[in-house]
Amino acid sequence: MVASCGSVAVQQPWTLMWSFLLLVSPVWSFQGAERPPPPSQVHADPLRWSAPPHHSGLSYTVQRKGFEAERWSDFLPCVETQKTSCNVTVLDAEASCVRLRVLAHGHSLTSDPEEACSQQGSSCSPEVQLSAHPGSMTVLLRPDHPRVLEYGAAMKYLVHLGREGEPLEEYGQSPSSLVIKELEEGGRYCVSVVLVYFSLPIGPPSCVKCQDIPQSGERARQPAWLVTLVLGISVTAVLVVLSVFYFLLFQSRRIKEWMRPPYVEPNCIRELRPVDPALTYQPIEEQCDRISLIHPFA
Image 1 (cartoon, rainbow, N blue to C red):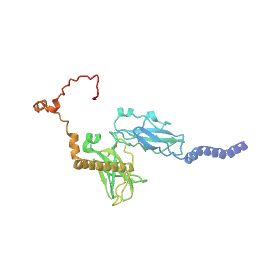
Image 2 (cartoon, rainbow, N blue to C red):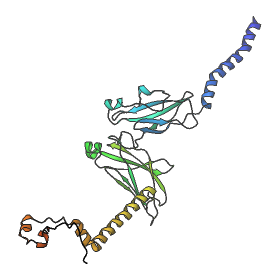
Image 3 (cartoon, rainbow, N blue to C red):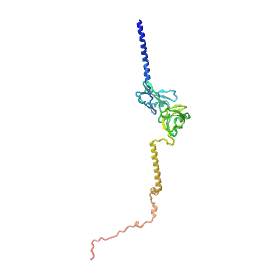
Image 4 (cartoon, rainbow, N blue to C red):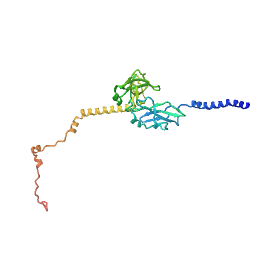
């Protein structure tokens, strides 16, 4: 009996060790796996995204957040889907200006969320254009945006600014276009804008846009096709103006002849004009005898 008890005492440490290894091995494997990166190029119009590079076999979940919602919730038609797009048109009927984001799943881990942005602007997203000047940049925003007109002074644009490759930081709010000064000449800055209602974000933000800041004395770089188009129009206009001046100065008589209508003499004048006898002369037909035979003189 003692031996039996002793054998049990000897086996207990091995049993505890195997139990510990079985419990700890999932934790080790979990810590060894890396979280997948978030999807890229998440665009809201329509909702689509790209898989992270060098990662396959991932699934994705779309989350939504309404105007008055406090937290994000899963959009049930697109939970752990293998697709890289989602039809969210049903959300337009449920709520206006819904924000969207996408998460990636892989190896039982979930990535950080990536919020969808709007490329072209909509009734819930700002339409953004950039204009650069030496040392400054103007963010062109519509003062007549439907949401700005609807909510008045309570609705504004929130601008985020940062250098290319660096995180964007909140710069300021404005009801219309905003001028950003004291920028480094020759640098490249990026901007993202979102509508806010009493500082509460509404709808998808605009996709990040970047612009080079020209140096003093340097004009903002324009696309080559635009420069060619403007140059062609200018040359054509100059040639047209010179041609018009040439005809007006040196071909005025010919122009008058071209523009003069054909002359038609009225009948009353034609009747009063004296008749030229030469025009009315009719020759008298002479009466001649046919000579049948001619004898020469002797």
